[in-house]
Length: 164
Picture 1 (cartoon, one colour):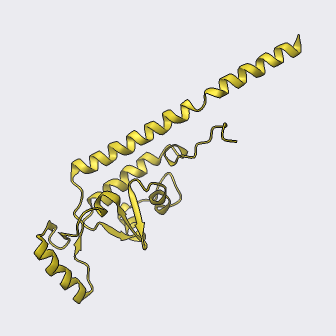
Picture 2 (cartoon, rainbow, N blue to C red):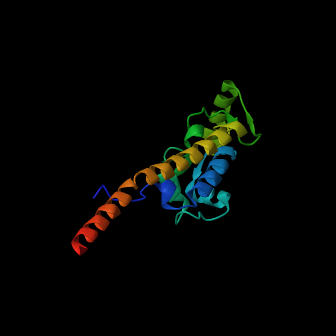
Picture 3 (cartoon, one colour):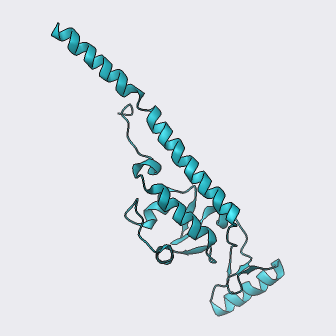
């Protein structure tokens, strides 16, 4: 029944979710490679998540921050950028140089170009968004519990009328 409160939001299902989100946002936003296989991100994150059984669950439950395509996981904000970041030199390159490096990648089979890392301000903005979403879900959950007091009052009234 929809009337009864259930914490279905991943933000409030586990009180440690925010810590995992912040860690994942920082790592996926700042690492030199924008998109990697799940196992490589798990190694880069350096720990198991504390709010889920694995990182894949967190990535899937938060499509507002992460995307999974063909086994590769990336931050949504980075995914929207052009591949013009040279991971060997850790710098952005011109469009012409990116085209040249793409040809080299195709010949060698080694990926060198990626999408540029997020700036400190951008990562901070994503962390702020995660915190705000977390707070909104907590407030929403508290607002949905108004009926508990009303039901208890009615039950108390019924018991007192039946007892007299």
